[in-house]
Amino acid sequence: MNLSFRIVAFAASGVCLTLALLWLVFPQFLLWIWRVDSPEPALLVARRGGALFLGVGAMLFLARDAESSSARRAIATGLSISCATLAALGLYEFAAGYAGVGIFLAIVVELALATAFFSVRTDRPPRKL
Image 1 (cartoon, helix red, strand yellow):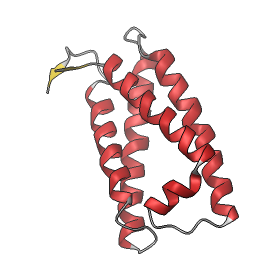
Image 2 (cartoon, one colour; image 1 turned 60 degrees about the vertical axis):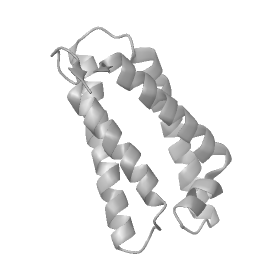
Image 3 (cartoon, helix red, strand yellow; image 1 turned 90 degrees about the vertical axis):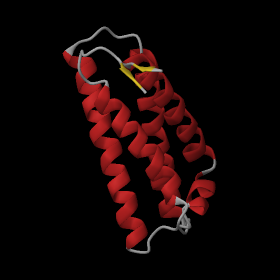
């Protein structure tokens, strides 16, 4: 399978749009998976995060066919950094006892997306998986 910006952006847009729906409509469910309490302040932040996922998902879906450019490289680099940072934060939150083992589902997806976006950020030919 060839890994291209189009494939990565399309897959990530699906992940982001799914997370947007879950964070906006069912934030308690995701917090429950992570074994995190869900008082109203946590739900407020969760719903606001859902709005960000909605915007990122839409951006990735609309940019999936973008020609190679500095803007496309910026999108891929920025999302690689964001996903790697989220994975690191997830590991920290688990180690500190703030999140349960369910956080590892998010960590695995974040590491996969970080790696995928990092690998498609340049104009090199697509890599075979």
